[in-house]
Length: 192
Image 1: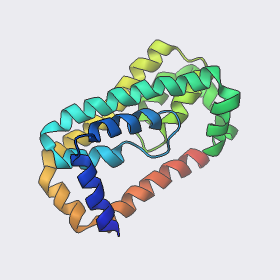
Image 2: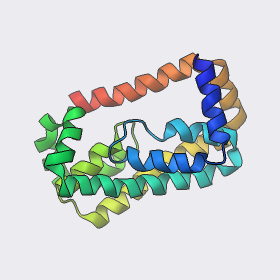
Image 3: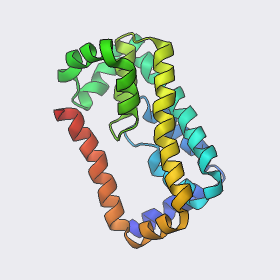
Image 4: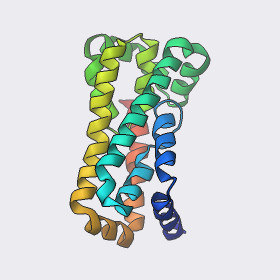
């Protein structure tokens, strides 16, 4: 079944509408959706390595644009929408500590956490709820998301076919590591 899912994802990645799906996933992941755009970005780059830089740029721009929606949720609708999302990810108990950290280290928090498997929506919503400077938020988001997606693109562009073959031969291992990293990000969010 895992092999069929992988083959389906690779087929989707080669589809002529895949870029629009990547845009949608990168956009909504920054505000409400739990699945990171890497799930689609990686197979898209593996399917067409020559497009790696363009796809990384598209994912970056869509993610930053979606970050503005997350910021708006935090700024305008924190009680109605933002708080329930943060509670879902069990971050409300750390909200005050995060607020104190944001006052001093906001840009660095956005840059560092935006590069990790920790859901980016938590940073965007918190930034809006704390009325963090929008220009600084924008610059830090561009840096953070660029570093994340262009690093993925660079690795896949550079190593390309061997990476694809490694993934195909060790699909269960790769999927397990990805799930561990994703779940680890949520656990780190909860307890760190």
